[in-house]
Length: 263
Image 1 (cartoon, rainbow, N blue to C red):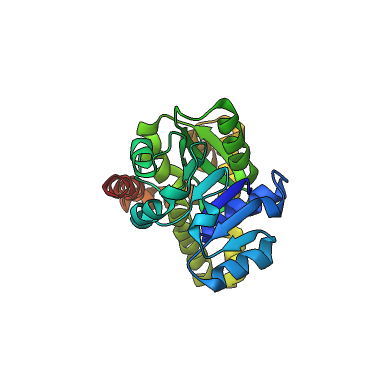
Image 2: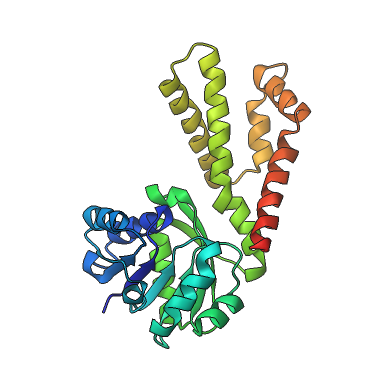
């Protein structure tokens, strides 16, 4: 029997599979993934050497099953899959909006887990929020956390914070990409080649993130340290404040929370 199964094999599933295999948690032959198209499963098999199938029922036989489809598809996919789960199946959701209670009721399973990973998992730098249901054993929890930590960092949180965590880490990479693009556009406007501009902007974001994580200083203090009196940086900060930069970011994340709660 396969140890880990995936219902769906899109970007997030592939990132997780890559992490699992890179850390040697299981062998490729212990993973099975299902998808709706032959092209998708063929690509997954060629890339990872895992077992693949067009039949969700086959993937449901694994010990741990990841629901890696869009939240709008959860109801129909779980209805199809539920008869093929065993009482010991650990069902792992990686989509926003669906609560542990909903997952348990829909699947008939006691062992349910909610994760909210993000796309940087594809390069081993994911940040994943984890909520483990009360029906899971300590061994189940250890396995799930081992899997999650294979593609980045994770933290267990209470379920009521899941939507907030989804906004702060799950959706926010898209907004950071927009900022990198805007930063690069400004450099291009001033004559820098675009590829070089992307490298400069992206590395600045990577470095700033590491400063926050490793220095122990408040982000505001780190910002102040860059702003020399009468200098260029404080002029840019003034412009961002005048344009509502902080409130725009906050409102964007609150909008993602509201959307997650509506799913």
